[in-house]
Image (cartoon, rainbow, N blue to C red; front, side):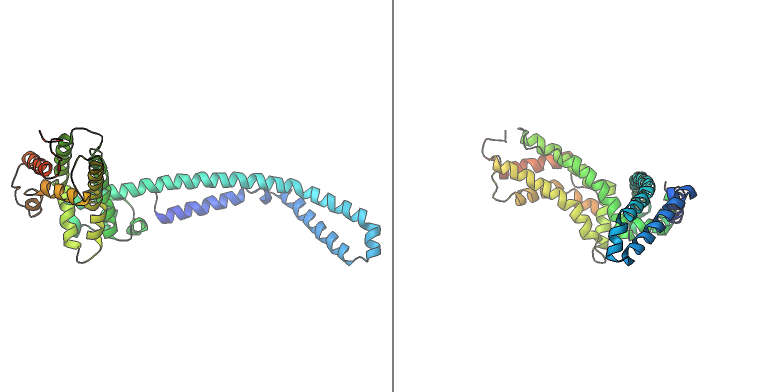
Length: 301
């Protein structure tokens, strides 16, 4: 767990101070020759600029010899500085990578805690103070990651939805020859997902907040709409291979989704009992879909 922002700032300041203290030019035995050489160089250049052209020709060898010696004395300090700053940049880069890793871990811890709180008490009763108390730290730290409770809720809920959605859409493999089996497996997994208490709570919250904020549309885009697009893509593959007879894959996907949800999802959203058992609903939905969209003799048998 990361320390509070104030402590992180203190640590950063301390590290900067330490880097300055370790700077080679902070050591007297390196700093003094550097300053003397720079002073001599300034004097030589100024004196050279005030000489008459004839004198410049006479003393050019002497002045250039002095200039060469001065620059030669400055080189060791410059080389040490270059090596030092390379090591400082390397340490700073490693520190930034470590900080990003710690920041990502902190954000994930906040999301996991927020998900737990939202599930326990609901969106309305949950607060940033409650979540920050559980995760450890202040509300200011939490607001550094998420601007509002709405944004935190959307991130927490859609994170779980996206992971489950990826597992679900992985079942839609157009290379599988048994279309009925693919649709039934997908349908059963889909109903398990959308009828879970977690998803039902998200949907109810999104509907309740739709009129007052952008939470509802955001959850829809990152949840149901994304899944609907994957299903549409699968239907497009079936259409290209002449497995289904559909002029618009989007309509075919919407019809299959509606057949799966009929008599199941809507009653549960109102807190009532589903009209059908999930397995019964899936078999009936797949039968109806294949009768409507399959080419004769290809998938029904």
